[in-house]
Image 1: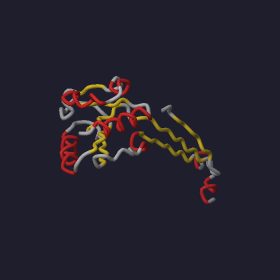
Image 2: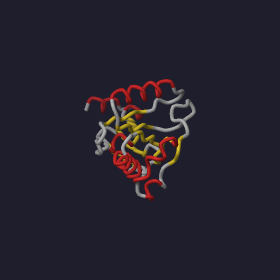
Image 3: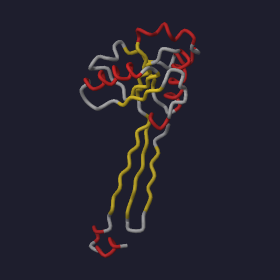
Image 4: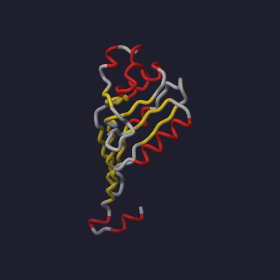
Length: 150
């Protein structure tokens, strides 16, 4: 996904800038190869890189070679130095609780978690992007504060 930037000019010299970017590295946690395929395709659709625990490499046997070639292995996703921006999990509530506990122990920025039931293959792409908006109201900077009442 290409970074988008828009500027919208309001009636009072109000500038709004909007930008969105793909989450660069997304950890995929599933027990089913069809769920894994859906997760990989969602991550690739937004321009991200899917991360997969290396101890589960045998589960990729049923996947297309081009999808397997896009995966980056992660030796221990629970380690404090494992780096990813989001976790996609098709699993139980107990698995989600465990993942949340692991994420809470990590230092640095808080990593998000999306959980779907096993077999839920409609991954919301909006969860895979980061949105930023900046609003600059420059009305009073020129000294004409009466414009603030409009």
